[in-house]
Length: 449
Image (tube, rainbow, N blue to C red; front, side, top):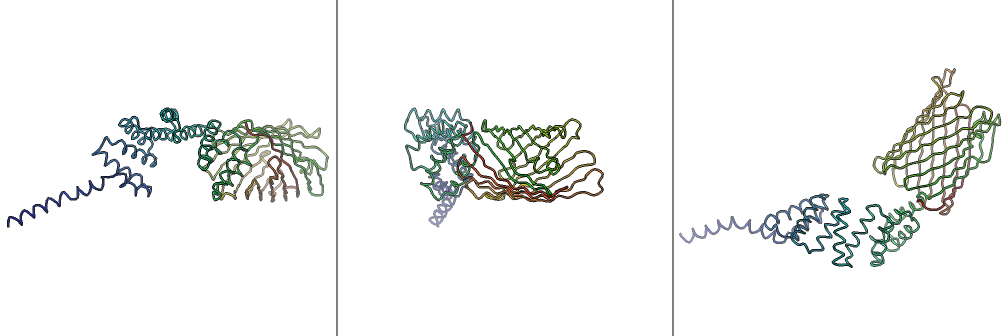
């Protein structure tokens, strides 16, 4: 009986101690325990495994570092930095911990402290590739494209098959305004990784990005009612002075050939514009333009002012709106309000609806709606197809006049410096029918400053 009681006591003790022993056994290697969570991207659960271990073993520098890594992956950069700093206190000579802390500082945007960490590692180990990569990324993320390009070029020479380095090199060349070298880097990546679908898009983007100078020349044929005209329609010179600043000057003769009243009286209607676009940041930009409408001696010269604001909502939606005013001596002032949006439905398809309201006086006004559909088949080609409709109230008329129309505009890059353009427009307007066909050429020179 005593023997049976003793065995029962042993079993009872085991029932209490066995779960604890199994739990301890399960945590005997927290890195192995956390692996399934990391593989499933359950970084919070992996961090909990390490934190439980550190309650018992607070001086385990390696686990502090592992904790910092998963916290960083989980987006907890401040906690990650604190974990790495704790690991470094316990093991000051560990270069791997210093590299990890350097990246944590860099992802946090603290480039100065990140730079200190990577330089310290390179002083101890001058050939350390991860530290060299860290310094290169700091240059790239902080906007120093020239330095980043040089540092990633050194890494590419060290590891020619590394696609990551070549991608970063291409981005650095693109940032520093060297699209030719960026394209060369992307083509090298394509040879190493031909299945990468983003490369063709990047090469197209480089082909179509702004250059220092562009010259557009348009000529064409117009028929308004029973009158027609042909010849020069428009000339424009645009300069990309900086990555965020573009200015232009335009001579527009289309009013002379598209307005029936001016055509019949053989009166020129030349328009001169000076303007610029400034990009405040990745989300918003402003266009300001001043102009002059010249009508010879037939009627007074008009002056125009236009302002337009754009704003991006995410990557696929852009909003825009603005105001234009035209005024002159002894002539009624004209006001135009416009608003629109740009919606990217796919990489190759963009919808651009817009609304315009014009007012000459209290009794004369019109409003128009236009829908442009932009097709982007790739390699810089572009096709715009649009429709428009409108209604106008004319002074002393009881009923409103209607307008309908359609158009297309195509852009065809035949080489890097020369693009061809074509357009056709039809309007059943408020007063007359208009048919216009035009051809243009665009010359592109240099790189943006």
